[in-house]
Length: 160
Image (cartoon, rainbow, N blue to C red):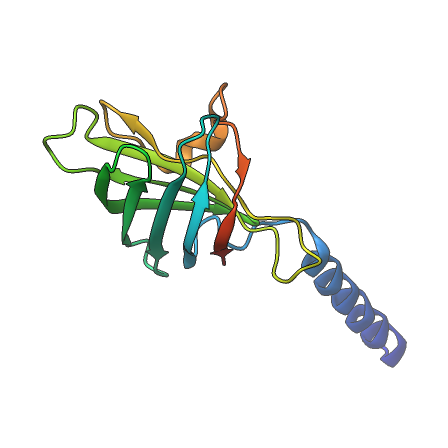
């Protein structure tokens, strides 16, 4: 092989590697991910709700987390056990279980991290949605219906 062909091949390989780095692939889809936050939100009603949570997925795909839900008007408090975390860019889809005596013992929520600091738009959340049947959070982005998102009134959400 001539020296010019070797150099041309090396330049082409470098260019291909560089272009592949620019392709829009979500690095979170199957790898490790973290979503956490503590925030207040009103989801279409005057009732202020506080949600605090931490959800993780390790490199082997193990998913876990916990959280708390509190409705400031009714006084309802619920412990959240998170068993599913799906992240696409700055949006986290989360699901899990509520206490077994709850009429809807499964839940899901969607949260969006809009960045940090005063110049960023407020983070957003769907609030907590109770369900009668288990939810696979990785399927939520494919649903025909997407839960409405509301700007949080206080707190912070981080999605990585």
